[in-house]
Amino acid sequence: MANRIAGVLGDLVHEVQSAFIADRQILDGSLILNEVLQWCKDKKKHALVFKVDFEKAPTDEFQFFKGLKQGDPLFPFLFILIMESLHLSFDRVVKAGMFKGIQLSSSVNISHMFCANDAVFVGKWKGINFLEYMSIKVGNGNSTSFWVVNWIGGTSLKLQFPRLYALENNKLVIVGTKLTQQSLDCSFRREPRGGIELEQFINLKALVQNVILAPMEDRWKWDLESSGDFSVASIRKRIDDITLPEVNSKSRWIKYVPIKVNVHAWKVKTDALPSRFNISRRGIVINSIMCEICHNGVETVTHLFFSCCLVREVTRLICRWWDMPFEEFVSYEDWLEWILRLRLPAKNKMMFEGVFFVLWWHVRAFRNKLLFDVKDPVKAGFFDEVVSMSFYWCRYKCKATFSWID
Image (cartoon, one colour):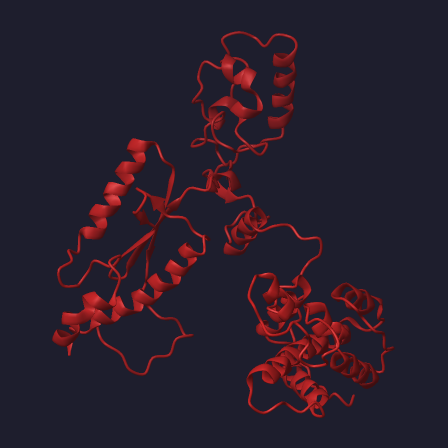
C-alpha cells in the first residue's frame, strides 16, 4: 500500500510540501525560506514569519479507535494528506485577500510552506508590534533599562522625556542604579535648564517618586489584561479592534439557538442575503425579482422577512402565543425597536427574540423549497414548525427545565 501511494502522492499534494514525496527534497522548504528571508533583508522589506509545530498529542476531545503508529511506512503519507487540507484552507484565505504573502516577482508569491508536521507562514508585515502591548514589572530593577524599555508611563522614558534623554551620559543605565542615585540628574552632562527641560524633569520626578524596588526579578507583563498574564482572547480582541470595521450597533447573539441561526439573523440585519433583488443588482439576469411566497412585492431582505404576508401572519401567531402586543414591522430597525420596548425578564426576552431568529431561518428555508423543490411546501404547518424547532433548540441549550405551556 505504501509503495503504491508513494508513486502518486506527488500528483495529489501541492508543491508547498517537500517532505517524503518522490522527486522532492526534504530540505527544499528550508532553503526556500532562507532565500526569502535573505531577499527581504536585501530589499529592506518587512515580513512576518510564523512557524507552527503540531504537537501530535491529541487531547480528550479527540477519541481515536484506529490509527497508524509512528514508524509505519504509511504514517508519513497520512500526515502529508492531512496537511494538504490545511494548505487548501489557507490557500482560500490567501485568494480571498485576507492574508498577503511575500510577492517575490509578478508570478511568484510565497505565503506558506510545509515539511511533514511543520508549517511556516510567510506574509506581509502589517505594522502591528507585539511589544507595544507588553511592559516591564520592575522588581529589583537590575535587568531593566531606565530609558529604553517601557516600564512606566505607557512607553519608554526616552520617548516621554526626549530632552532629558539627550542630557543623559549613561543612556543604558538600569532602573536599579538610576533610582538609587542621590539625584536623577547626577548622571546628566549638565543640570536641566528652564523651559521644556525643567518641566520634563519635574514630570519625571513625579512619575518615578512612588516606585519602590523589591527583592525580586523584573518580569514582563501583558498590558491588555489587568492580571498581567497573556491571553489569546485579549490579543484576538485587539486584532479585531484594529482590522474590523466599526458598526453603529452591536450584533445580537442569542445563546439559545445554534450559531448558524445567529449568523443568519446577522445577515438579515446587514442585508447580506442573496435575495432576488440583491442578485439582480449584481448584474445577474433572473426571471423575476418578485417575492415567490406572496407575489405582492419585490423580494428584498426587508420584504421577505418583515413585510411578506406569510411572515406577518406567523408573527401575529407568535405574539398571541407569547401574549405580546402585535405590531407590523417594515424593517429590521422597526422590529429591534419593538423588541427593546417589551417588558420581559431578560431570559424570557432573549428566548422570545430567539423565536424570531428561528422564524427567519424557516422563512429562508420555505422560500428555497418553493424555488428549488419539485413539491411546494405547505403553509399550514409553518407556524407549528417554528414552535417545535424553537422549543427543541432552546430546550437543549438551556440548562433549566421548562415547557412552552408554562
